[in-house]
Amino acid sequence: MYSCQQVLVGKNPELIPILTFLCEQSHKLTNMGIYYGRQLFFKSHKTLGKFDLEKVYKHNYHYKVLYSQAAQQILRTVAESFRSYYSLIQAYREGKISDRPRIPNYRKKGGMAAVSYPAQALKLKGNQIRVPLGNTCKRWFGLDCFLIHKPSNLAFSTLKELRLLPRNKCFYWEFIYEKEVVKPQLDRDNVLGIDHGLNNWLTCISNVGTSLIVDGKQIK
Image (cartoon, rainbow, N blue to C red; front, side):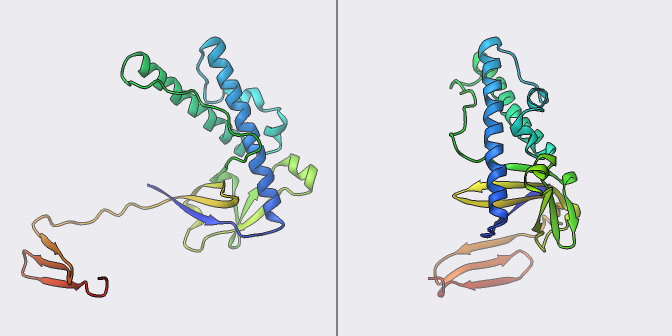
């Protein structure tokens, strides 16, 4: 089972320009992938494979400026959206769904898009996570990485993915981590009856001779 913990990025004057640059490049690369997928469908009605966009754009400026695994994830997400569209359009033609699906459209000009890093691209240094930038950024800006604080309640070994999410003129880190599923041990022979009201918010009686009342006056 996977869970997501979202953390707001603080107003860091050194980090924010880097995050803005990454999300802008992600936005442009996403639109390039959408353009290729749309043209492929309109002109030849061919499907877009999982790795097709990476082969087309691996030498592109917007691809090379991002860390390779992050750029790959961006294009694979675009390819996945087109594969979903292909499945839906086929279902529409077969009469399985009534509304004709819409082909993925371009993102608005001048925007930003999310950037994802798989766990294998990240390293733990003390209580901070090292996020790589790639060789092109190192040549341009003299930086090959930046550090962010790891949430104290998460173990780095459980981290599966780190997402940079631009939203409402802010940035958020989304930590995707593996969570152990705890299966409750239920005794189906035991039953609790609950009657909710106003002054007595919850009146509870079990079939094993126990009872309790939750006072509702303060809530009221």
